[in-house]
Image 1 (spheres, rainbow, N blue to C red):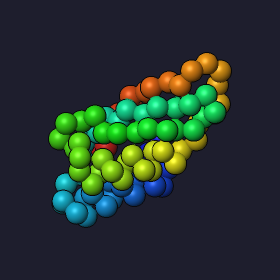
Image 2: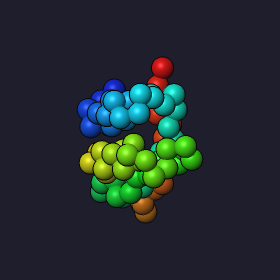
Image 3: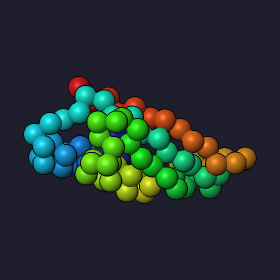
Length: 83
């Protein structure tokens, strides 16, 4: 997801500029509707909850559309691992 989404990548760049720190891992929870639209996203890694990174990633990930599917909304956890 990081390689293909410039807005997500931008969040990490901005956070590093702001804090001088680049997280090695950030876990995010997201909710995807059957239409493929992402309707919720938030950082689950305690250290980054409520930070500018949390807000930026939430907005960026809500802008991502996945392929549609049948059934009810699905919650996913996604780890961003940076090296």
